[in-house]
Length: 381
Image (cartoon, rainbow, N blue to C red; front, side):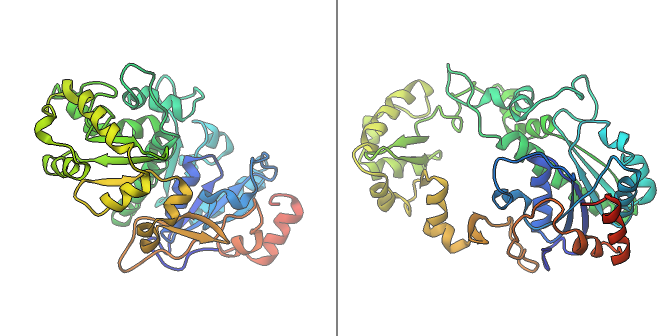
């Protein structure tokens, strides 16, 4: 169930079961070899799908602990004593009320990295307010920037808040704190807020705004305004992407599509972009997506077809790199990034809550008799 290689092999992490960003951060650490133990509730809420389809739960074991009992809290405290890091994603104050907040945990284990995942952060006027990805990226300024000019912003799935600004920043923060703890011998709290992470992802664009070069939603080169960095429909109703931002790539795009640059207006003037876009739209609709792939995929135009998830897994480039893998017959993205000397092993499927009780606790130093007594008392299920 645990990986036997990877750059984080040997690290032990406690994950308090939660939603989206917390499990994603735990997956990232587990993919890289960390031994992650998920603490589930004895009576978890019903889920929309069978456990095997929750890919972000891969590569770790689970025990179900009654955290309403003193014995359950004592068990988690004991596990914390042998952990390098802890991940929790409750609202501020919940872990403190359970007796598992940073203060008692760091008293038990001064080297512990205590990772906290929330939407609004541990403090601030909105810290206790409920919310979801859409709300966090809205307040961060990221949502307003995505979409077409003159139309409402477009939701980028929950990639920017939950997974990018949330789970990835939490995993990065934990990795940073672990490196520092190796030098100082002291752990610390990592306050990862999705509103902070989403704002951080916008750093590049804030530079353009500060320099007076941000044109607004749907009007920037990479935001859907330009005709040379855009998505086009093909003859068969599918789509291709063109990223010919630099002049040399743009010139090659025109050559490949048969358009005469001399007959087109200056691309450097955004006022001319609608005319250029209309010409390109007409050309790309003359062939199917696969026909354009045959012509442009290896050209100097910065081109790729727009693929759905199944098509992406079958594309020759992704197949050659092993970008997608099968785990128990189910196709999913492979661990990333890649390491030359300590590669991650093939993931194992996520497990039902509590299914690994004996093996998991033995791996954290408990004896068989102790585990049996905890089960008989109903502390673990």
